[in-house]
Length: 292
Image 1 (cartoon, rainbow, N blue to C red):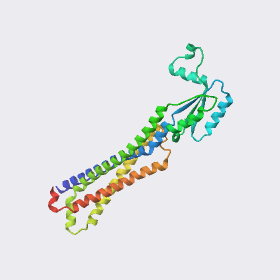
Image 2: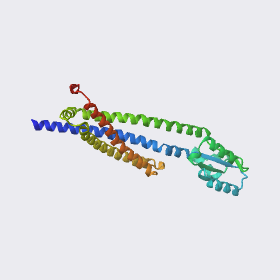
Image 3: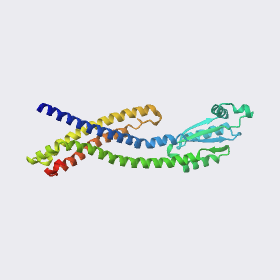
Image 4: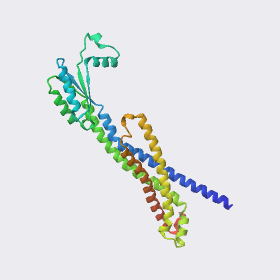
C-alpha cells in the first residue's frame, strides 16, 4: 500500500516537473522567435529597401564614354549598393519576355532607351535622399529621365517605422504574459507541497532554508526548459536561413549569441523570481488557510 502511494507521489511529481519544463520551454521559444524578429527587423527592412531600383534613362545621343563615366562615379558613391548598365537591346529582350511577344515586330523599331539601373544602400532609401540623388542625376545633360517608384518608397519607409514600433510593443506585452504563465505553472507545482512547507516552518526551519531547495529545483527546471527552447530556436533558425538565404540570419553571430544567452538567463531569472514569491506566499499563509 505504502509502495503504491510512493509510486503515485513520484508520478505526480514527475508530471508536475514536466508541465513546468514544458511551459517554460514553450514560452521561452516564443519569446526567442519574437526576439529573433526584433533583431532581424532592420535586416529584413534593409533587404526590401535595397530592392528598389532607380532607372537612369540616357538620351539617344549620349556618348558611350559619358555613360561609362557616370556608371563609375555611381559605383564609387557611398549611397550605391549596386549599379548596372542596361542597353536598349537588353531592355527590349526583358520586356518581350515579360509580355510574351516581341513588341518590336509590331512597332517596327525599338522605342526603349539605354539606361543605368541604380540600387541604393538601405540607409539612403528615404523619400528625401532619393529625391536629392534623382535631382542631381537629372541635371546631367545626357540624361533623359530618372525614374523610380515614389509611392513605394514612401510607403516602405512609413511601414518600417510602424512595424518596428508594434514589434517592440508586442515584445513588452508578450514578456509580461510569459512571466504570468511561467509563474502560474511554478505556483501550481509549489501548491502541491504547501503542507510540507508549513510543516517545516512549524518545526523551526527558517524561511531561507525552506525556500532554498524549491528555488534550486525550479531554477534547474528553468535551465532545462531554456535549453529545450534554445534547441527549438536553433532548428527554426536553420530552417529559415535555408528558406530565405538572402536575409543572412547567421550574418551577425554576436547578436545571435546575445539572443540565445538572453533566453537562457531569462529562463533562470523568471524561475527564480516566481519560485521566491510562490514559496513566500505559502510561508506567510495561516495554517487554516492551506485547505482553501
